[in-house]
Image (cartoon, rainbow, N blue to C red; front, side, top):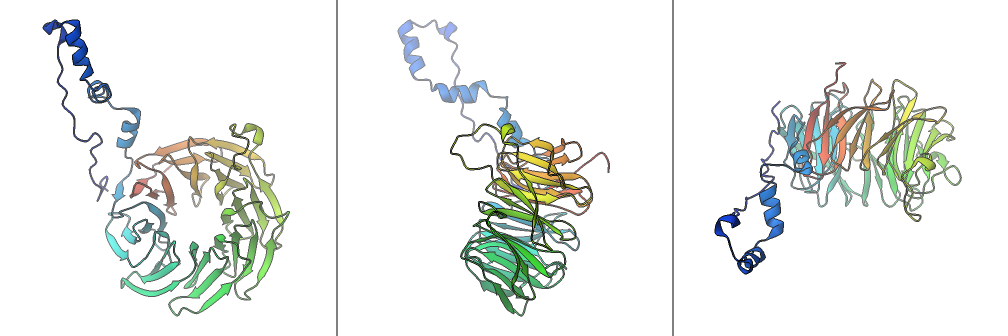
Amino acid sequence: MDNNTQGDTIDLYGDEEIIEVIDLNDMDPEPDDLADDLEDIDFEDAGNEGDDEGWETEDEMEAEQDDSELTFSKHKGSVFCVSLDPATNSMAVTGGEDDKAYVWRVCDGEVLLECTGHKDSVTCAVFSHDSSMVASGDMGGLIKVWNIETKEEIWSFEVADLEWLEWHPCAAVLLAGTDDGNMWMWKIPSGECKTFQSAASQATCGKVLPDGKRAVVGYEDGTVRVWDLKQGNAAHVIKGHDGHRGALTCLSCNKDGSLVLTGSVDGFAKLINTATGKVVGQYSLDVSKVKPSKHDEEPNSIESVGFCNILPLVAVAYLDGTLGVYDLSSQVMRHRCQHEAGIVHLQWEESSSVVATCCLDGALRLWDARTGSIMAEYHGHSAEILNFAINREGTFAVTASGDNQSKVFCLQRPDR
């Protein structure tokens, strides 16, 4: 693939200012004349344009580096979310600040579907389990579902402000969480609906378990509920001493859905047995090794969590830039992988011990969880990466960034 397909050429320097250079020795000026001449020189401009001409600052060199294979630049604002189609991993959907979602081909960036009609930033965009449909949701709560083959909108519904959106793993059923505390479930395209109500606390994150019969939802008040989707009741409620002391930010389940890992602004990750509703583990940073912070500063928020599929390890990403790799059962931290900026999202590769992270510094990184060492680092974005997705084989990643672009990075590794 060609680099930066559909990308725009960026002039990093802009129009150069021409500065006349005067040889003061040849003129042999009087002291008063020299003083007058110096008063007319703009030292800031002269220093920036003259001294640095032909040289690049470190920031400019980094901005020029682009390790991506392709750049998708149709969005006219920040790109907030990205997903790959589960059937083939050949299509991506991105949602952005421009109130649009695009379905596009990963290999060449060709737009397959433009999802329009939203009234606010599109913060959720996901494919159905068979990749035949895509759902897009905006911050204001307008959700739309599109048939990808016919490119037609087949269903829409409006809820309260949207927090998350997810398809059922094996049925044409869509779930959403809203800031009024509700979880919604619809059959698509009929629109048959069921709501799962809780106390008026935002349903900040949610996940349908692999069995398709239960969903785990985290709330702003620190509560976690395991919902029985058929019966419509909460099978387990984790709150109080067992719950978090702050809003939940993320959650993830292991491959068989027997365990869920939750993350919160309180700086703790909790391991929950979904069959019993019991908290069976807790992960946190060793406070003595954390960077010094102001006394009244908020706890080190957890931004993303995930299970390794092949080893008994979990990863926890913190806002201070720490990636903690923990032993699942003992809860001992095996490795501390430090980033220079806050981590936004992590994802384990499907069948390896490699965990990827994206950061507020605009870089995508691969880490070997067995050793804690960095394996690769990819640059190309000029703003923070807000989300990314990796294909099943772990050969490429698609990113979403605040620079209005989505990029495809080829994940080259010596072992493949």
